[in-house]
Length: 254
Image 1 (cartoon, rainbow, N blue to C red):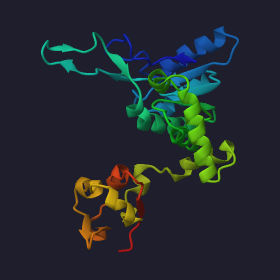
Image 2 (image 1 turned 90 degrees about the horizontal axis):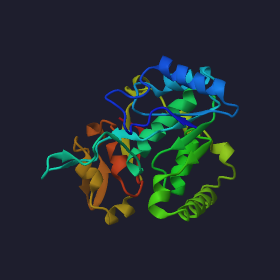
Image 3 (image 1 turned 60 degrees about the horizontal axis):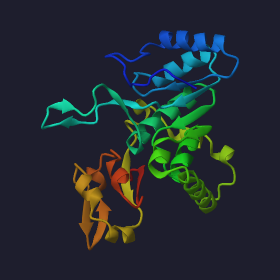
Image 4 (image 1 turned 45 degrees about the horizontal axis):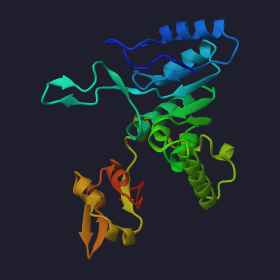
């Protein structure tokens, strides 16, 4: 596995900021080693799919992603100095949504095996990556923070979820979520609205969906949360903040 995008110690520009440069570096490695080469890609680029194609063209046997995200963790307000002396890499739970999008793009752009990396700490996370096309996953931050025994915890969680959902084979679910992805232009005119599936879990919540809705499309009537369809724009924010997964997006009945 070759990492061409690690932000540690780099200058203003990334190590690889052009597809042709990625091709040159990958081909150089492929031509000079006798083992399969996996290219680790980054989200710090304009189009990860194009880079995936260049890696394949250069002879890469597989792809992985993402590398850490270029970051500065903060500033010491008393000293006026950054908390790192140079740019560093941000990883852990916070980058998982970014990594999921990158893995999906790699899987859509090529037929190379993809290894998902970034913010994986639960069994459900592993299954998400596989459903978006990952063949394998890699762990780093979760092992650093929880020890190697955490791998067993993740495997147990996977087994429990697979049993609950009647999933008998990872191969049968690999990439299934890719079919649900469309370009923004394709979905922009679809009349989607939020739907609250079960109000009985709302008693355990503090109304996060109502607080988050900028369009005041969620109301409480007779102690139950409800969606005012004519005010709902289908932005999808409320499902993302619901701690109990009780909100879905459906086609409008209006």
